Image 1 (cartoon, rainbow over the protein chains, first blue to last red):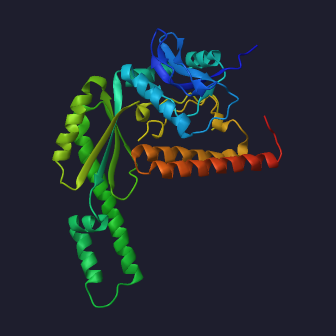
Image 2 (cartoon, each protein chain N blue to C red; image 1 turned 60 degrees about the vertical axis):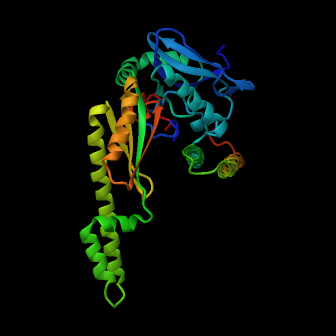
Image 3 (cartoon, chains in turn yellow, brown; image 1 turned 180 degrees about the vertical axis):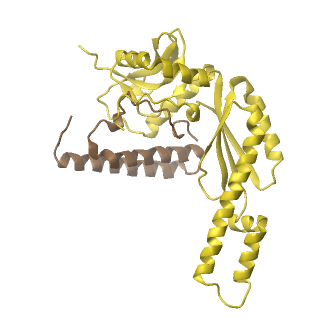
Length: 257
Length: 80
């Protein structure tokens, strides 16, 4: 009979030996579960026991151990991280899947081997993003002065025109500055990717794939790059993370999504 | 900024997501789950307080329970 204990899956690593990560997994049977590997050749799935019948919700009590496991694994090796919530019925199911997708998994492990992901957010530290952009764009400033500078109140159309120009300039400024930042980091990273910036004062939301032993150099580079920008630009870096943005692996067997 | 919350292209669809295991009308539930993850990300980024997070999480769990009750109330059409 099939076992009733399933496996919760954190990610995939390259290893030819079983690895133990300690009792740091999601809760199972009233305690933090033991995190270990399920091996196929030189690939290992990082898992812990989990009852497939349990309801699994993205609550803090579950998300925290998921994160913690990824961080713990990343201390020693690079993991292809899974998003929260993946379970398998058995080790067998995991092994079959690893075998079936060996080539794709190996290619992704090659891609991220020996690396970490570093995040970088660039923001405008200004009171009013509107004033700031008007301040750096003459055409926008001229239109604003023309519309608001006379005795009659601006029409709805004029305000919309100004609003549209503002949006365009804001986005153009973002693109230009993001391009500049990327260019400056290019020599010191393996890969880079951009996310859509959230929030009007966000200039860029970037992720970099960096060699594990080049983390220090990356951090120094952040200070150098920040120093080359005006004082309104704030650079926040984070990491090391598992290489979430640099794994492109769709095993696509089960099209539930 | 949580690793788990980062946009993720490497989807392993082979492993059934417990979240998706139930029936088709669970799109709502997925949205609530996405909000739960987003709230946790905000907590990690420090953009919401512990108190605000706890409140938000409780509220979203309550919504999930409601969806659950609703579904059960409608009977188990095509239940697995």
